[in-house]
Picture 1 (cartoon, one colour):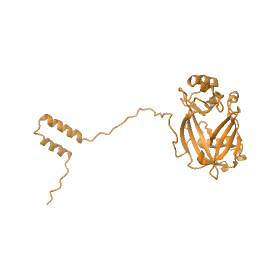
Picture 2 (picture 1 turned 60 degrees about the horizontal axis):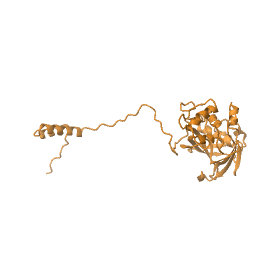
Picture 3 (picture 1 turned 60 degrees about the vertical axis):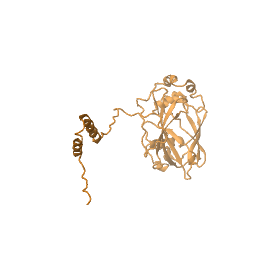
Length: 299
């Protein structure tokens, strides 16, 4: 006959049993042993971590390809305390000089393909650029990138630009445009297409559309689920020596009425409606865009 099964011993019975066995031990040994059993059999407390009661700030080295599933409006606020505002381009220049390498700052508007301090002042005043009050300052820009595709899968890219000062700037990138304060991605897409490609699209409905009307009789169609957001840090080509953080909102779109081969478009002056005409006239702006179709895997 097999022995009867052993019944589970409750913690209280177990401790009582140990106490009986250790009565013959010296008091000191008995006390130490009892304390050991007590602490080893007690449940361990769960660790608790307390975070300071303030906002978590992420460094500017958030790298590429941070993907988000849906479109979202830009997170910029032109009145944010981190943005620095200036009364005039001269006050901006005086503030920048001690904070940037002198040779880099001196090349603004002089080195081919660069812009000048009037451009940066206009960007800040219009809320297109945030300039952090730091040394060196960091320029943060929200940009919409539109990968325009056609039936054969080729993508439209801007090969180069002709600037108002006669310089030619190489681009080799899809249609891109700085976003306005509070502007949605969709609105920025249609504004970018109209401003940079509108002169080649011969359609009266398109020429007169409101930026809030995203249909435009099907001339511009954003491909569903094509939105990707990423953050990049790199030196600014337009403003040498000024670090830049680009928040890039990319979509794929189809645009009707575009030529099959290479073509160029004229852009309305970027700050043509700005109140201070003398400042806008002193800025460098793009006069002509040159476009071509390339294989999708090349961009």
